[in-house]
Amino acid sequence: MLSSEGSILLIANPAAQNGNGAAAAQRAVGLLRAQLGEDAVVLARTAGPRHASEIAERAEGCSTVIALGGDGVIHEVAGGLMRRPAARRPALGVIPVGSGNDYARTLGVSTKVDEACAQLLGAEARLADVGRVNGHWFVETLSFGLDAAIALDTMERRVRTGRTGTVLYMESGIDQLLHHLDLRRYRVSFDGGETVEAESVTFAVQIGPYYGGGFKICPDARIDDGLLDVCVAHPPVGAARALYIFLRAKGGKHVRFKQIELRRCRTLHLEFDEAPPAQMDGELIEGTSFDIAVEPAALNVLVPF
Image 1: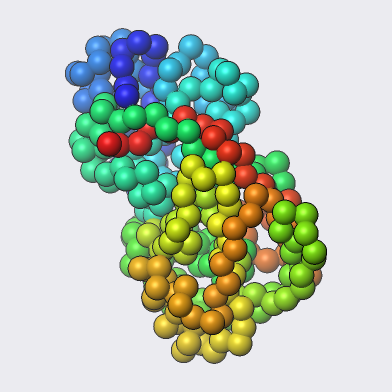
Image 2: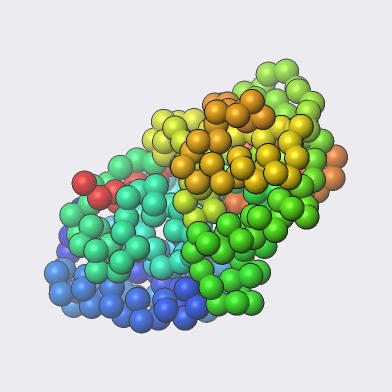
């Protein structure tokens, strides 16, 4: 629960949601200060990529750090907090002002600023897991292949068109499915076990259930179970079948198809023959070899009752 004991740092991306982040930040600060006191909330605006992470890492004397913006800003803030010693790590709150808002969806935080602030004021702090890939932290999603290509293409389309939301992700998804349904050879070992070689259309590793603006790729994933949830889509699958499965994934119904493999683990080592499209919380990551693990109970996260 937010209180006036210990300052609250609100890190805001003013460019979020095509510039709506600036007004949203002022609104949020005003609402929180009205309840907690004028000096209780400090506003820090980001000036570019990775700035949110730097601010969060230097957050001394704060009881809570709130990330206001899209999944990318939340990703950066969480990464900055994870670079702090565990004993000096403030709690994390989120006010979603983005396109996908998948981590906020997992936490149950409203996309309306007024409601999100009210939720934070009455929220409880819960220990949540954080994922790690090649030294980088992620809080919701890590994916390779088709779904990553869709996520990265969606970001480009958002910048080009100014549009946001699930419809944009679906538009990109349909385009990628029809024109870029590529198979990728991979080798993987789960929890240090035997290495398996296979092909995938997409390979997702989740802390929470969502990606792509509400697609429930791993329906049973929980942020506090100390496990990674993995969803792999295997061939054979043609464009029409892939499109049907893709649309079913919005409600988590894709898991019924034989092409879908679900796993749980604490660590995995994953290699691809060629560098695939890859994203973590919507941010680009590059490479062919990935060491992935879960850090259980790593962050105190504010979750609405």
